[in-house]
Each structure stands twice: as structure tokens, then as C-alpha cells.
Length: 288
Image (cartoon, rainbow, N blue to C red; front, side):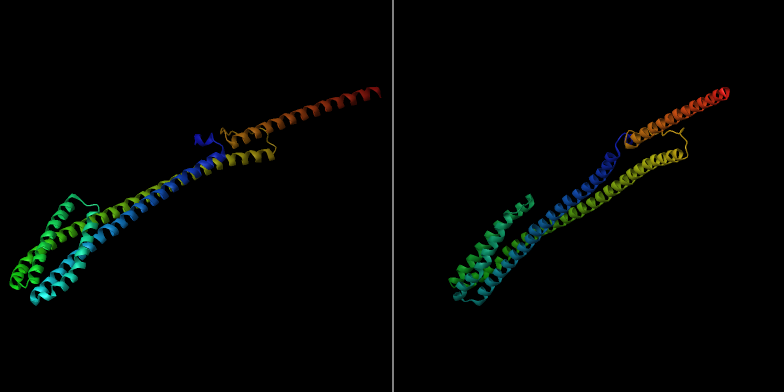
């Protein structure tokens, strides 16, 4: 309270509003920063995790289509279909190369890098064996191609197993990101609520302090003014603050003292005049 009494009313009000404004700015800043972080995390969840899962699923599906084309060729026992099969499986191979290259450029963990290296080796083995099958079919060695095709199933299964592990890791990363987003949302909400409550409490306290101090001073001034209107010049304002109210208090006290002195002088003059009038009347009677 003494701190406010030493300040000008204008400065006190400005300080109070500034304090409340600071809390509003803090709440807004926390909200904006954390919303931006949540938005960034959400974009990462979509652009990296979900797209990665989609691409890995596409990689596995392309491998399956390629496998089916090889099986159809082997079971047809027709070497003339080899060229058409090569033309059909080529887009699957090219798309898988693009998917794998893009995946390697993403932010991978050490576990993912190990699995990608394993996938590279398995892909090379898989492509080696199906190229051998295609060569055997082109040469008309159908039985050898059929035998090798049965062995190729295990190579393709290894690819699928590794891809599933990569998808599982990506799903786990997505869950972790989602948990972090939820935690960030919760912490932001709690921080905003707490700061809002603190700001509201301080605003109410400052309002009560200002209203109380101002109300008390105004009541003193009102009582003093009533005393003056009733002709009581013995009262004095006792406001010790150094703000505008203190200046008004000193000015009113000085004005009251001046009026009191003026009344005293007038009263003294009247007494002097009365005394002179009485002396003049006595002199006149003696002369008569």
C-alpha cells in the first residue's frame, strides 16, 4: 500500500494495467508457441510417419505383384511371355527403388538404419533369384525355373518380414509423437489456466487496492468538505501520500488555514471598529 501511496495516480493505474497486460501477453505467447510446436509435430506425424507407413506398404505390395507375375510366368511354361513379364514388373521395381531411396533420406534411428541395410541385402538377393528365374524361362528351362521359383518364396518372405519391422517401428514412433503432442497440449492448457488465474487474482487484488485507497482518500476529502460547508475551520486533512491526493490535501489545508487567518483578521478588525465606535459615542456624549 505504501508503495502505491508514493506513486502518482496515473502511474499507479498504468502500472496495474501493464501488469495485467504482461500476463495476457504471456498467456498468448505460451499459446502461440505451443500451438506452433503441436502443428509442427502434427505435420511431422503426417509427412514422415504416415507417409512412410504408406510407402512401406506400397513397397511390400509391389514386391507381392512382382512375385505373382513371376509365378504366373513359371506356371505358364511359355518362354515367349518372358519379355511381357519383364515389361510388367519393371514399374514395380522402379517404384520400389524410389521408395527405398526416399526412406533412406528421412531421419532414421540406428535400429531403422540397421534394418534398411538388411533390406538392401535381401532385396539384392531377391532380385538376383527372380532374374535367374527369368533367364531360365527365356531359355525354356521350365523345370529348373519351377524349382528355383519355390526357393524364391523364402526370399520374398524375408523382405516382407523386414518391411513389417520397419512399419512397426514407424507406428511406435507415431504413437510416441502423439503422446508428446497430448502431453504438450495438457501442459500448455495447465500453464495457460494457471497464468490466467494468477493474472486474474493479481488484477482483482490491484483493483481492490486502488479502489480501497482511492475510496478512503475520497471519503476523507468529502468529510472535510462537509466540515467546511458547515463553517468548521478546525478540521485538517491527514493524507500522507505523495500522489495527487496528497497535493490536494496540502492545498486544501493551506486554503483552510488562509481562510481561518482571514476570518481572524476580519474578526479583529470588527472588534477594533466596534471599540472605536464606542469611544466616538462616548466623546460625542461628553461634548453634548
